[in-house]
Length: 540
Ligand code: AMP
Image 1: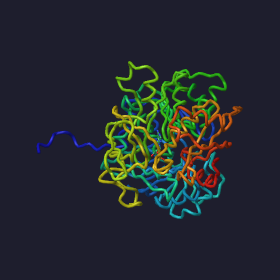
Image 2: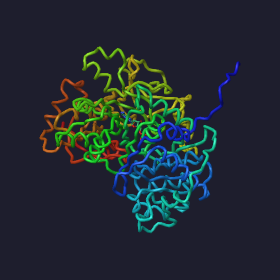
Image 3: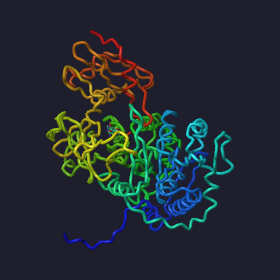
Image 4: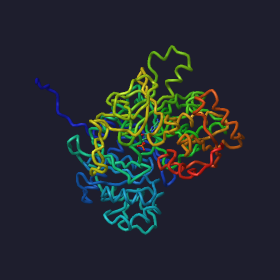
């Protein structure tokens, strides 16, 4: 081998914030604070305060490899934790505050968090958690002395006092790039949550990939607002992508309703945003109801669960390019992105739309494969569907502390998604392995049925689930939420399926409900629905 002569420089998270400070030091980070007012400062400030935080943690005795928990919204102090904790060689463990308290207790104890930093919103929650988390040495309220909560929390400390006591003259250590940097537990619907342990290397590589023109395409001329939470898969990498590219960052805090988001979009001239479909439903409803327009927003990225095709069209009517992204906690999270190829540009909009509704093409770095039950590779014809396997430098090789044992199959990570891949490389999720409706030995895609339901103007949200059937094993049932003031009957919705799917795919029944259950991360909680409607009598 002829060895090349390039420098041996590790890929480190601290280099992202150092770069943002040096090259984009005056660029703003705007946060809707939990205390109320809008907070503004710059990348230079983030860098200084992250170093002060690293010094404060060192003073508390935090060492490399220790886990530091966070229970926090998207805000500037959370960003400082991202850089201060990981930068010093400890592990930023983002905990999803929307999980059930029992799950949170399990996660904090399993991770062995030494300190947990929390936003004021979560003080009542922390009061309940603290007695059950004896390993936590201190709970740090992310606020100043004046706003310190009155809650009974043992070892409570004040963030601003800890940080304010330090000078910030801290040199980031030159870590091995394989050092663990972040930890995020998956909120699986069954079993205990499992932790994905990211490295500095995987995080920086993922940030490069996420910045690419066919992915988030974020530049120093952009203003990015991640609605996707920093407590769930690193806000899809945006907390790293923005400093890498010098983009202005707008952090919405707890204000995730349509009105609060719209106001922030307009006031800060946001150009790019990302979030799950439920958030956009609320935003678009607000915008429509008040006859508003977006003056600066150009792109909205949708992922976390399938983007209803109708949403892509609605965004387009408002001049916003809505792209589909797919990924998972175990993938840092990005795997595919639904941007168009050159060949699509000359095509009629309907043809382009066929590509846009799919989950997208593999981002360089991620390889994908679809296989049948016996592990045989399936054709990439857009029709054959099978288990989706992935591999790449930001895909997990196993869960934290070896939970779940060996999870790879011949070096591939089984995603638990069922998908097709077409000749142009676009992947389309047809279902979760456990959600497909199995009728007469054939599979019906629950997602396809849901997309058709929500394309009806009277339907706000819908879930398709399999209900036991004596002859066919399972038959599809639609559980749907009507739009406010909209009227539609069961028969009308069933008729809407005719001509859109094969006859045997048309659901057997429809039930209207006031709301659907979601997981803590905004996905439909189908296990609960299947339970609820287990005994549902389908019409003959
Ligand atoms: P999580 O690890 O909680 O982010 O969940 C990952 C799972 O969410 C994936 O395995 C998919 O089942 C689902 N998911 C994520 N993005 C999409 C998408 N764009 N379309 C459909 N499902 C998605």
